[in-house]
Image (cartoon, rainbow, N blue to C red; front, side):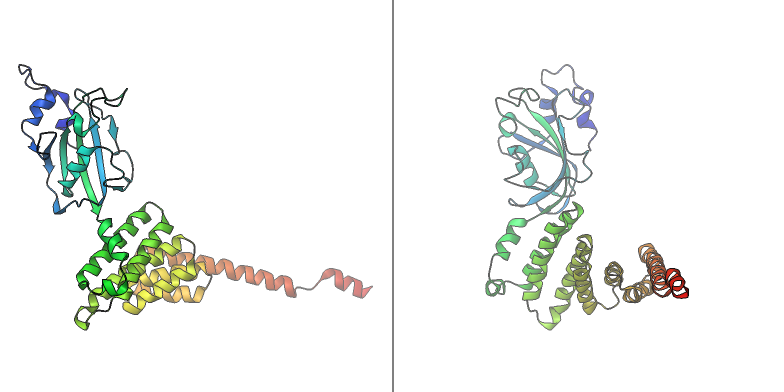
Length: 327
């Protein structure tokens, strides 16, 4: 992440000073706790809103002890960081405060005094007592689950009292949660989130001038549900959601492709071909669509070959029977 924090030589630069490397670094950092217990230095600015208190965050982080190049704690080696909820999954008070000061895409360096980190006892044998630690944190994304959970708990009548933009925002949050769970291969949990989003959008009536906003949001969720049910090996349900997406946009290549995939899994080869050819018409150079058509052709050939072999066995003359008859 940031190079200078990992290089103790940079932090030790002024050998004549009686202050420690972290103390010298802290002099040029922003105090965000009010008592200089949590100090911050922005390496890369983020964008959008600040993290909300009840959010679930997706972060990369590395923690360093003074005079050490290698982190004592890091999740940067994981392919997909785990989604963590503020107030539940994060144990360092300093990290909580630091995250609340960040925006999406931001990369920052923090110094946490013992009170905001591992306390007077430390965490033996790794963290000595009364230790100030440095963390570099990159905020990849965050989702405000508290707002969504509270809204979904309301009755339909209560939800109708809120403006449409509120409903769209909550549905988008539910979908984003589903997307994260999907990337974690937690398809069943992702399906639950997608269905919550779809229910919100189905229950909400919108004036004609805003109906296109609801339809656009529904389309995205229906496509997600269709793909998720394919992953769950439930092609019939995947087809149903794909066809609902086509009601909104009959030329949507993703919906046509999902329906084709579902029909192929159901061995409904003619329907699969119809959907896939329509998808190819919309996106002629899409490799996934073209490869699925090749897969369909191969599957259909295997199917017809087996049919021919079965028919041949059924109607082929029985040599033993003819021999008995002749005798």
